[in-house]
Each structure stands twice: as structure tokens, then as C-alpha cells.
Length: 259
View 1: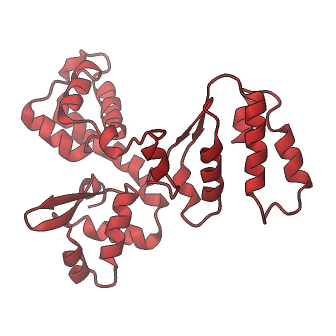
View 2: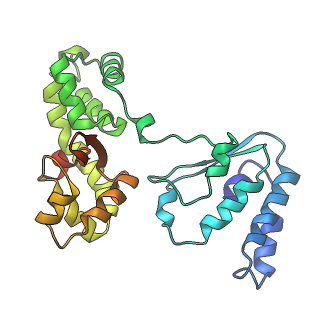
View 3: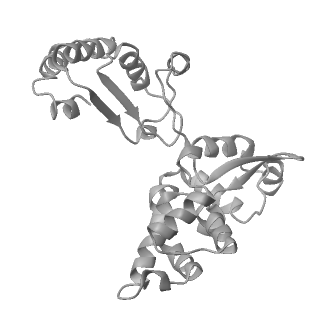
């Protein structure tokens, strides 16, 4: 992070790097390095600065880094704003920040396109006009993920090259996009999961309704009651839905990708 700040604030980090090189007890009191960085920020940063920590979920849950980030957030001056991008909620002490209105949380529900937004996007940007039935199928296939819709756009552009934008068949474009969508999620999400999680996902992809009890009967070797909530928290193809019969899980694009 300090190297990133140096790109905008020359000289910041010199004291920290010297401290890291000369301190033998860093492993015992790593929070002191955070304090050195905070002092440098107070001394050098005068204009508003935004720091982005991307792919934060790759750190995992069991790492002392979270304690250091907590300390950084607790004492970060107002001139600096921290954005953490993660597939799941990081194990940080965020409740106090939320109570103090110093935290803004953008989750998957904020990022997914609604049917109306999907319709507008496809009409204005992609040049595709959808009937209600076609829009319903787009919702089932893409679940509102912009990445999937971008893959649709790329296929539409290839199919309409040299023709009018509105001449492509929306459903044909969607079906031709499935391979591109599959490859993206296979590389970016599915491949990053542990082998046992991959096996579980390929099993439940065959089910129309995913319920913990049903999974436990079909796949007794899998701990479905623990795996399913973990997949939801990590936004790995799974969402929660409740009806009169109780809680169930739904595969978000999973059936089309893996079955």
C-alpha cells in the first residue's frame, strides 16, 4: 500500500522502509509499523487521497494482516479514504465505523442489474430490444451480473459487425454468449475454489432447488449445512431465498455454467 501512495506522494514511506529494515522485533509488534505509516501520512498527505485494496479476500481469514488494517482504519486521518474490494465481508471490526457513519458498504445487491436496468442497458448501449419473455430469460441466465452482460455485448458486436445494431436476435446472442460467460466464471471464480468445493458445486448444479437437507441426503460426504452459507458469504454462485417452506438456496448462474 505504501508503494502505491508513493506514486502520488513523493517521499512518503522512506521512514517506514528504514524502520522495517532496522527493526528486529517487527514480528512481535507489527502494529508499530502501522503507526510509523500513519505518522508519515499525517506529515506528507495534504490533498484528498483514495487508497484501494483490491482482491482483499485472497488474504484469507487467518492472517494478522486484518489486525493491522483495523488499526490503520481506526487512526486514518480524514484526508485519506480507504476502499476495500472483496468477494466476501472481510473480518474487520466494522460495526463501530457503521455506527459512526464513517463506513459505506456496497454489496452484491447494489451491483446486480435489475430487469429495468438490464432492459435499458441492452437498448441504449448494446442496441438490443427485449420482449418481456426475452428479458426474463436474460435475468435467469445472467442474474444481473454486469460481467455476463458485457460478454453478451461482445457477442452482439461480433454478430452485427457491418450490419445495423438492432438486427441481432437477442436470444441467439445470449445463447452464443454462454461459452464466453462460462469461461470467465470458470477462470475467475470456480478455479479459485478448493477441489472439494468444486466437486460440491458440480453436484448441486444438477438440482433445481438447493436445500441443505436435500444435499445432505444426496451427498452425505459433503457438509452442506456449512458449505452452503460459506458459498453465499463468498458470492460463489450461491444466493439465499426464503419461502413458506423455509430457507433454500439458489444457484446464481451455476446451473447454466456447470451442468
